[in-house]
Image (cartoon, rainbow, N blue to C red):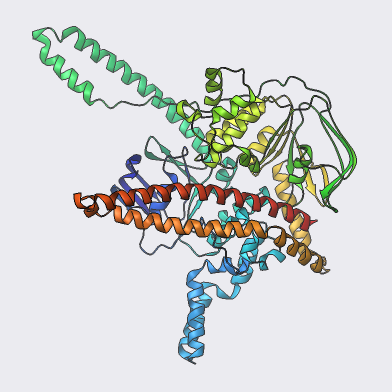
Length: 635
């Protein structure tokens, strides 16, 4: 088992964990939760051996094979299928040894390696890899496409597939659902339930945690606290723990007040001086219990829009697509105040296309499409984050929406979204994905929309912010259309579900459990069909792929150039920091050299930050274009 004993962990000067202990038993499936920045990812790095405890011990069985998801994907020409199998380095090493043995005509060694390959699962690895890729949303044809053809989000799916394929005793998954749609999340959930090793999972998806883990470890006040059961069980246990903590805190405050009263009354009296000094020492040694903070730092609500016309949007026999390619046909949908619709459907079926139509980013090809004169759209999608101005602050963005508002009123408003004090004045550029998502939501809410279009709004949001968004949406008076892989959010705020499938958008009769069953039945029906798989117009697909590669050629070149620059400046920074780590450079005779290296270090850090932002922007743009291409190809 993993045994953490009286361990402390720092990153820089920040104490993440202090004198904490925990035990993780073989075969347990553990959800690791806590506020952003509390040390969850650092704990994973420690388990991978990338960090060491500052004090205490973290003992892991020596023979355990630990697997986690790679955060970067090399731009290689290997096919998606081969790239995933490459993740099993032991298998690839055996295959290389077999080639050498065959070249040497060493029959004995060949026989032994074949036995090892069988034990490693070499003879069904292609089918296992294809099954995982299919579960994560890759079409059969795309499995043979080179890795360089895929955008950032799809490359992360390839890295996840690598981790799932590779045999492991301990599997570390950090937000694995962030780049997945609902179908892939449901498939991954089933896979993890069958996983026989020890699982540690960081996730902000309540339903995903409920269905995959049997223990929660929560990072609270620099301490690891274990709760038995899934996330729902954790919420009940923690609520009781907070209640008892509050009682204990109040008792301690009463005792503290009594001691202080005694000291104040008797410290001036010689006959009581000894007792007073004793009480002072007792008070100094008393451990202060922090009051239980049951309320989240996030708190906001949607204000009533200026107008609530009925209907907000009306469409009859609408057709929408890309160029001459139709994605959705015969759309009939009326959105009225109070409509709360969740869109279901496979990746590439057209959910995002429908959202873009409603957001006025796409125009209907044919049909009747009417919007009310008083329509105010609040549109959230991941690409909206790109429109934030990197050099401006959260306050700057909000002030542009309301130049008459006072600074204090804007500060108060931003505080509800977690931008407190100087955080409201900090630049957008260094913000995390979660912080940018919170800011975009803050800007949307401030404009009092009467139609909310939310495309995966919970990506990068932590549990507390998801909870605040959930509560706010409950009382939203306008119409809402939601695409999300977060089933807890879908089931909490949606009154109706619509299924996007086979070019149609139709009401879905049932809940999310029924949708899960629908996916299974559809998969079984396809598998049982006697006739061959529907013929694919390969010539047309090849043509579309060639056109897509041509249209994104400059973007891909830009990404490769940025990756080379990242590598160059990373190497430059590492060399500089190695020199700065040498104490000799701080001697008086090396002042000029020290000054030079500090300048190099500062320049490298600045350049890296700038290049990373440009690289992220380019990757997101490529991912968006890839998503649109996949929808066209799927049609």
